[in-house]
Image (cartoon, rainbow, N blue to C red; front, side):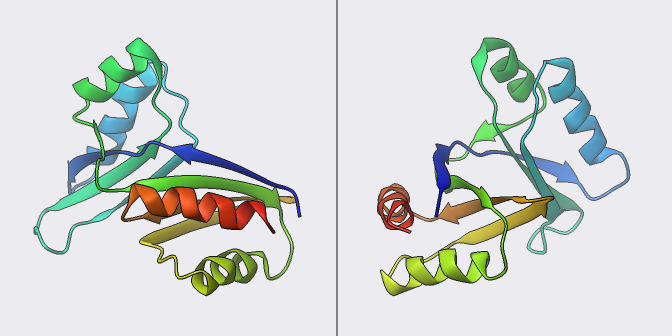
Length: 140
């Protein structure tokens, strides 16, 4: 199976749990020329009235400046891989099963299929797990 696997930096920012907060953050990034490949936002149940937004990629001086202006910081505790493949039934089970069989724990997984293409963003707690996951997935 042909997989395209790439380590990715994830950026995070706190948002208010109110209309327009997420849009405001994304508008600042857009004004800085950031072309996002992935966005996920959610409420923070541990901190009422707030949420968190995760994005990737942010590269280059202008994009870094926009990210800083919007309150984004590169996460040091979340390590991520982007995995692209041709979509097929059971792909998620195959990828996660291979990691599980090798004892690699996922912190989180977000995936979407559009047409014949699937993109997965896999999050891990440790940088070493990214390297191990990469080697495992390359064998599929």
